[in-house]
Image (cartoon, chains in turn red, cyan):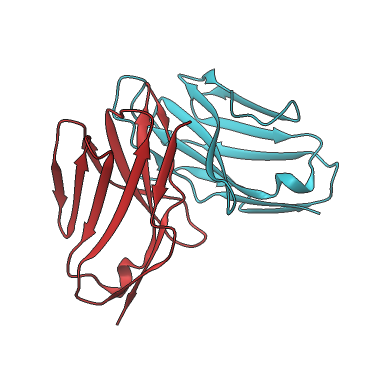
Length: 111
Length: 116
């Protein structure tokens, strides 16, 4: 069955450091993969999309990598800030419209 | 621009009652999704509409759940009769892309349902 694994434990990072979140998937080859941020009591918010033929994508302090051989995506936040604290969701796309959602990684940036 | 609008934000009801959740997608978006989120199961797709037509309802748990999209600016998700295990946060999301697009989703703030 299709499976998405993200860091199961909360990730505690000191302010100013780089936070790295992991997303591993099995049993399929997504055409692209999306990352979302979700704050408590809110809906997920789209951050970045990376295609299977792209190795890396950047947006301001965010960077995403996509390794189709390892079946893994890494999500980096550089110069992290307490405001970056949230749950981050990985969602590879399968087929024409279906996103398969990871459980999310809770990121805590400590001042 | 207004985002996806969902109502109610919170609903507490008793087992057996009918629940109707509402969604107004972003104008111009032709895809609409209903998701359910729980701690145990994360985000689960319930139903997907494209141009107001249900394309995939395989995630609808059982016949107690139904969804409609009578026009491009409105959708409902109905649970009748409701059960305690339906307690969850229900999200509506819309996308400007059809099946050919990259499909980034714009989520509403969710409807938190508690069935006693």
